[in-house]
Image 1 (tube, one colour):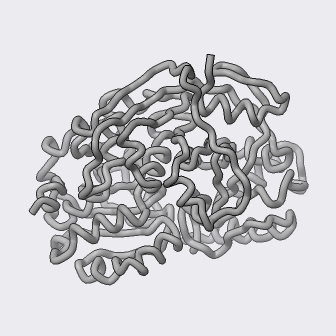
Image 2 (tube, rainbow, N blue to C red):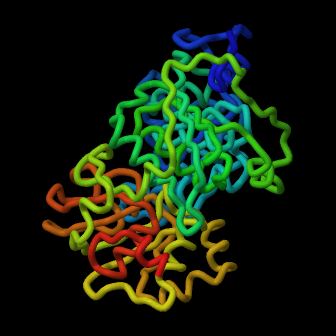
Length: 425
């Protein structure tokens, strides 16, 4: 029987150089390790494991990528100390790729700087490492003790996951990005545990139409569906993205025609429409018609899920000639400085600010309770990653999730609004 993308990648990385299949337990050689803002905690885990001086070495100083991203600039004394510890650690261990004092979202930065390549296995102590599947790589979040071990030895063990094949057919809308609506549709119909410790492989005509931004959104949200990996095949769009970002060789991976999937799901984009996740879970999803008219206080565009150029461009198109509603805070955070520069070059920043949007630095903070807090009783509509109770500080506000076009349209009207009404106007 043929092999899935996941089985092929993990077979190629096997320490024992053996072919593996779903259900096997296998030691794997990793290609890259992300150590983001929690690197100080990884060092602490090494101490707890019996290494009194912390990490003694790195298995490869050119394949460990360090960033102070989540907390740059730091907003607390604790984070300032941890950033200082990260600098000292990077210097002591000779880390070649250390992004210090550079705000952004680590996963976007990993892609921006060409640290993710097809066929690779890349891990890190952050759940949204699944995003790397958009570039035909196996990306997975791991625990901090595992990250300490991986940093020293360059190896980890995995159980090879089953594969769920999701075919997305039909013609994508041209007026707005719909990846967020698609993943919410899946969560609402099949549950946010639909892919628990499985690998999702996206395919189909609509997937081939998607640009890398939309694929990154879907792969990123793989973890919100419970997935270990969320992968796409590489194509010309992948190669165009990687061009000028990396000069290192890579080998793309495709599934065999007779690869076994434990489940196959087919989605027609016509079924998807506009979707919104209601408080307080990712799978509490409703069609836009069910929640339209709900008053909002804050609208937010950003994060590793929807902080890229196509997301911000959609907001700019909707806000052209319009204003943010009185009483609504529209906050925009590009996913990285590379994306920020793209927005500047595209002329998007000034019109959005003139329309009443607030730009903040690239950061993970807009996705969590570090930037853009909401008060008791307030309602936030966001295209970030999660909406569980307390995600934006107090457990009493309501957080709704939607795509960037829905967030922008709702910021204009002051209530949850179907963006198609404005885009077709």
